[in-house]
Image (cartoon, rainbow, N blue to C red; front, side, top):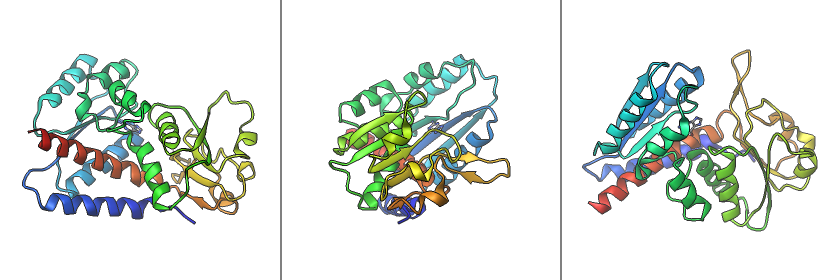
Length: 279
Ligand code: GUN
């Protein structure tokens, strides 16, 4: 079975539209991009287009690569205080002269639709997640949409980033999986994968995970989006071969990618909804 992220994202967008059709005010999303990284530009323009299509109020700020940290912090501060804005996303990675942690900590936690602020990360680690990192949330939604049983299953997450690996591992654990987190220093990844009912690959290396490492019938979620020299996209898993071993698998593109955007829109909606209930 192919776990189709495009189809599920569409469902999410339709239900958001339905909710919004009945409302006079609207969620507001601000996206900040610094520099010209080609992949980041593509991601940011997708976020911008989708927010516009859903009828969100939205601002996209494209700033030059030499923008100072102080200027970025003052923009974040302004967005924190702007009542039209319910979600603020600063696209990563940031240029080296900027301290990403400092910037992510400057975003008001209730507007942190990426879920990267230590306050939101802390809530998630305690099983009280509200603003949950979009890609991680999208992975779980895809598994649930595919009726994949999670409770009691053995899951291996490859990658331990704050953006994907760590939050995915926490969410799988909160859904009663037994989770192993692997990374570049892991000694024998193939042996660990032999035991895994669920595999989430989030490492950013094209076709790194080989089909013969997988357990027969494993469920494989591929978070990787790697651009090859010929311009095509490929995931972290050797997809063609893996489809013959896996019972369910996400394609690249069309798997996790669209879900990241869908969950960003959902988080922005949730932030807006919460602000309405508080006012
Ligand atoms: N760069 C890669 N993925 C992400 C993401 O989910 N959010 C942000 N802000 N930057 C990213």
